[in-house]
Structure formats: structure tokens, C-alpha cells
Length: 265
Ligand SMILES: Cc1ncc(C[n+]2csc(CCOP(=O)(O)OP(=O)(O)O)c2C)c(N)n1
Ligand code: SF4
Image (cartoon, rainbow, N blue to C red; front, side, top):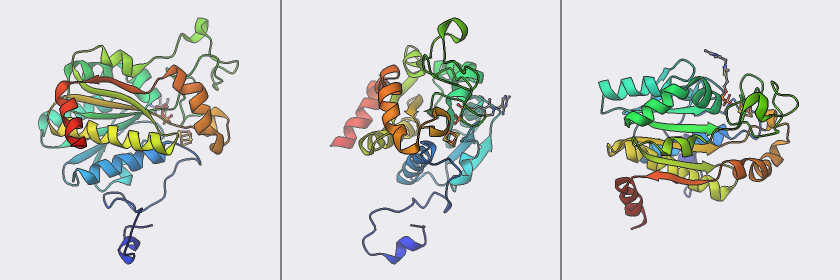
């Protein structure tokens, strides 16, 4: 239903958040990115960030994320979204910069930026879409590609001797003192989508409360590069990705826990 149409119904149970542009996504069928973009849109709307949010486009299939939201946007070079967000936040503390970064973007070319932004405790919000592949460029090996998993640059499957092991970014960043909130969620089922929405909302509220760096890693389907049917991709994630990347919260500062508790009361 479009933004305009929703006014035509008395009892709307599902509508596009007004802060989102009325357009379809450019993603492949079954891709998780569209769900993630929607959840971010819901958080922006719920928190009334129309005038304050600024979407930093990262490189990968979410490169034009800012075209989906009626908020300001800026493009960052590959992997550098946390550095761009840092600059914006430090110069204009009232703005709410955020980025949706892929695993190639965040955990490969952008490793230094994300580690140091987290270590500095920058008050920014990062949504890390982990689909275990370089989606946009044709399914090359990513830092999060699973052991034995096919990629176009490891056609016989990932092996440790050649490519090392997958990086668990959330667990790694949670060892730092800077982050306020780090969680891993997934968008493979309605229940998990709801949990993902709550985590993303909390990550924005962590920034709004000035509590520090917040990152939500979202396990996301990429059926085209996983070489599975879109309908089978959520189950593929359960069998293959979640054992390697367990869901949960890895860093929750007490002040963030208090924000969460306030939700339930
Ligand atoms: C400096 C630079 N190097 C390489 C590229 C090519 N490139 C574009 S997207 C991409 C991979 C993105 O993969 P990922 O971050 O996992 O996002 P996904 O597409 O899977 O969402 C690469 C290597 C680029 N645009 N700029
Ligand atoms: S290549 Fe993968 S990540 Fe990119 S839009 Fe298609 S399914 Fe989504």
C-alpha cells in the first residue's frame, strides 16, 4: 500500500512508513536487504527522525539506501561510512547519522574504519548486513563467507589454507570498551524480523541518548549468490549461517539496558 492509499482505509494494519519513499526496491527476489531497509524506515519514523537522520550510503547492494528515505543522505567511499558518520556527528551533534553496510564493505575494505569508530565510542548507528558474500559484484569471497561455501573467487569452497576463517564481527567489536550496544539478529522469519526491528530501534535510541557506538549485525539472505531458491534461503540461513554467527546481544551497557527495560514497562 502506498503512503497516499493508506488514508483511504479505516483500519490500516500494514502500510509503508511515511518517512520511506513510495517505490519498490531494486533488490533481487528473496533478498534480505529490503526487509532491513524497511526496519530502518520504521525506526526512523517511530523516533521522528525526519529532520535529523542522515543516511550514509555504503558501497554494495545498499549503495543507494538514502534514496529510500525522505531524509538527508551522503555517499561514502567503500568501507568508509563509519568515518563519514563520525565527521557528521562531531560537526553536527544534533544529527543522527547511520549507515547500512554490507560485510564486504564493513569487514573487508572498511575493517579499520569500523574497528576504530567502535573503539572511539563514536555516537553513530551502524546496521551491518551480513549475507556472507560480496553480493553486488557477483558473489566473491567475503570475510564472513562460511567454511566450505562456494564463492565466485573460491569455486571449490572456502578453505582455511587459502582464505582463513570467517570473522565474527559482533563478538570481535564487543571486546572493545567503546561500544554501547552490539547485537546480532536475522531476517529469516517473522519472529526474527520483529526482534531485528527492536534491536535496530534500540541502536538508534542508543545514539539519541548519547550513549555511544551502536551496531546491529543483521544476517541477511542473498539467494542469488548462495545459489538457492529465494523461498529456500531463510532455511539455508538457519542451517548454515546461524551456527557460525549465533544470534544475541554481545554488548549492552547498563544505560542501554535501562532503555530496553523502559520499553517493557
Ligand atoms: C574502492 C572500491 N573497491 C571495490 C569496489 C567494488 N565493489 C562494489 S560493491 C563491492 C562488494 C560489496 O559487498 P558487500 O559489502 O558484502 O555488500 P552486498 O553487495 O553483499 O550487500 C565491491 C568489492 C568499489 N566500488 N570500490
Ligand atoms: S545480489 Fe544478493 S544482496 Fe544484492 S540485491 Fe541480490 S540478493 Fe540482495
